[in-house]
Image (cartoon, rainbow, N blue to C red; front, side, top):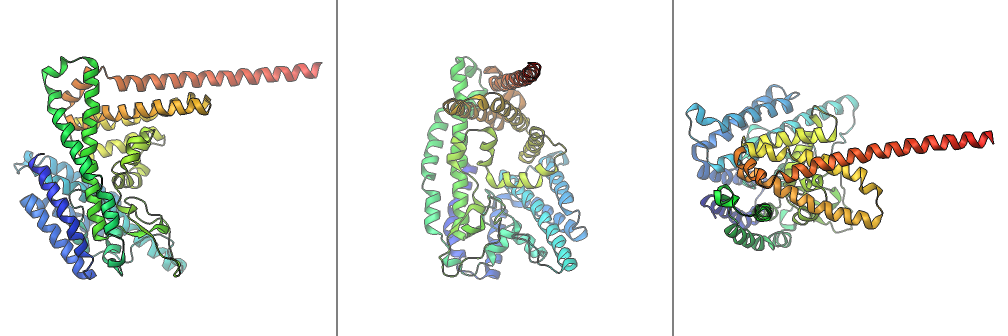
Length: 467
């Protein structure tokens, strides 16, 4: 493990026991202590680069105060433009930010855009209440506009400050105002989330030592046979998954120990978004709670879901919620594949400027189009047994597609990514294009069959009348 990864691990490990202590604090003390601890982590790991995140926060606050109506669009433009400056600071003679500063900046971008949307929704609902004299039906809406202190406290809250998960301001406010945090579940769900972390960690270390990423960039790698080169991406994606499974399960445990994102099961919470219905518990029935609001990874479904589009739902789930609510609806396209492409383009930009991100993310819409074409033209014609076989083949190809795209995500450079993809003959791109072509051909054939069947039925009807 690298020194940076050890620092991440240390911070994650420390936040879990600290979280249980926060349950004993009153709301004002909890808010101040979480802010102080978050600032200590930021300054200790980022130093002077903490000013980048502070500028982002202050800029968003100014936007909200000046024009709350346009705050969502303006905050998105502001934070994404600042991301560009942040990544190009060396062009201006400024020092290169640390990886920790980059992690904080990424999560802060999500928080500020979400905050602007929440504030706009708050003001619009208040106006409706005044004009209609009715209570707002919005679920989990703000009760007041956050002050500058509230916004800074939310931005630098120690929980998930570098590792995530993303959570809305309302989730943070609900955490501060929990009436009896000590009575909420903590130890058992925390241990449940941590039980597989040692396994993921050991698998990460073991497989990474046998299949190092750096070997892909060497001349020796290309001398191996095709199947070895193909299998290497399977091992790399496995290492990639184990690394993030460990980190995100640990980050979720830090949220659980503090009680952040704990809501009654009846609220039907969504990862990232929180409660989706207003829930009034029966006073005579024991309330059961969950932490779905801060769930960032579903390890089982990530590995075993069938479709490419479903794989995205179970990976980095809170960020997927953010993309689905703030980017996807505003895409300048109507077709699903094009909207998905736009969303993936924004996601790639959020991750960074490396060409490998774009090559990987923009392959996803192609894969979605391929699986959609095959489902409509092939799977729909099969019986139950045939559909079961189709789904197993689909799952296998889905995993290979993610193996393939992962290489761009980890190699980063366009030359390295294309060099690897060419070494396995761009196999996933070719399979996807063939699937789309087959789907279109069979779709055309199906239309011809329907047309011929319809013409035959008309002829039979005419023959019956004449007879």
